[in-house]
Amino acid sequence: MADFWADVKQIAKEVVAPFQGLMTVTGKLAEQKTVISYPEFRRPMGVRARWRHVLNRYDNGMEKCIGCSLCAGACPANAILVVADENTEAARFSPGERYAVRYEINMIRCIYCGFCQEACPTGAVELKDQFELSEDNRSALIYTKEMLLVPDPNRERVD
Ligand code: SF4
Ligand code: SF4
Image 1 (tube, protein in one colour):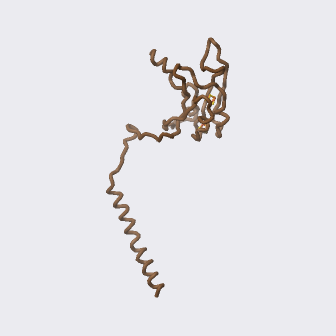
Image 2 (cartoon, rainbow, N blue to C red):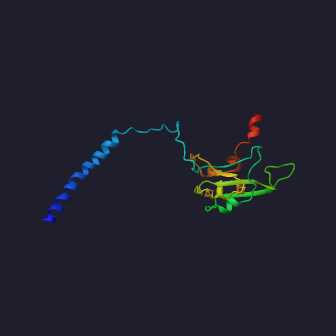
Image 3 (tube, rainbow, N blue to C red):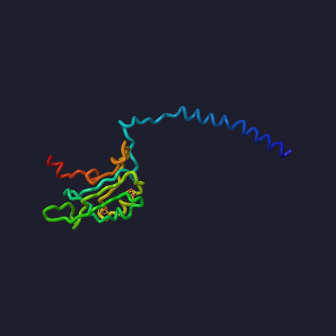
């Protein structure tokens, strides 16, 4: 007898289950939708979003990057190339002895782990919240120093 009632209970459960599903769907249909008209409007990204890199400057316009290559060493995807050179009094780019004469990130290899940012002793390389990174050719995804470096605030003021 106990088996009989267990079977009845099981059958009742299986008969009701699709209606419960339909009720869930109907309830969702009635909910107010959130529609964002992308790309005119963009949702703010989370504070820890890690997308496109930038190379930062100090307030006086000097480059923060000192060409130490710690970011390249920390990168698990071998995506960063740093070629350093000496600053001179006639041509000074960073406060340190050296600066990055060439700095490239291969964005095809990058996995956006942020290790480069963590490894950087000067806060030069930073991953920002810009996520629109698609290109129609691979060479455009090798980001050069010129592409990565933020504008010089002092030069902007002069212009
Ligand atoms: S985010 Fe990660 S994978 Fe991308 S360049 Fe930095 S260390 Fe390399
Ligand atoms: S970005 Fe930072 S870690 Fe990389 S070379 Fe420049 S100073 Fe060194």
